Amino acid sequence: MAEWIYFIHAPREDFAATMTDEEREVWGVHFERLQRLLAEGTLVLAGPTLGRVNTGIAVIEAEDEDAARRFMEEDPAIASGIATGELRPFSTALLRGRD
Image 1 (cartoon, rainbow, N blue to C red):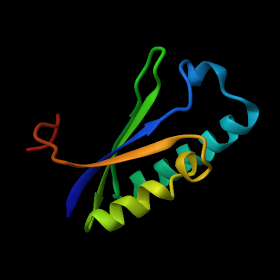
Image 2: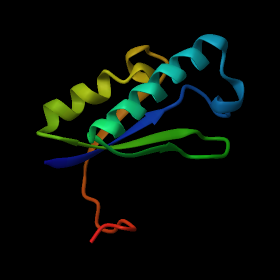
Image 3: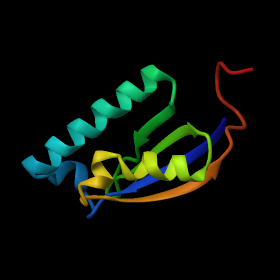
């Protein structure tokens, strides 16, 4: 299974500190989805960058680019139009605990 990384670009600087109630609700659904996909084995890792620019990253496994793009576009943060997504092929070279 191929690995992919997608970036979630927030709509403004300091996004995490300035979310509206609607944005916070969407991010909650986004987080619940990622938790579910982690438990199912699709998600490898996810998290935000910290500081003034809050870019999220998600590393996933998918059959091909179309499946990975669909996965990214269905992310509530992106599907809502609040954030934009950027997809790239990825390869985990080193990961603590992985042989």
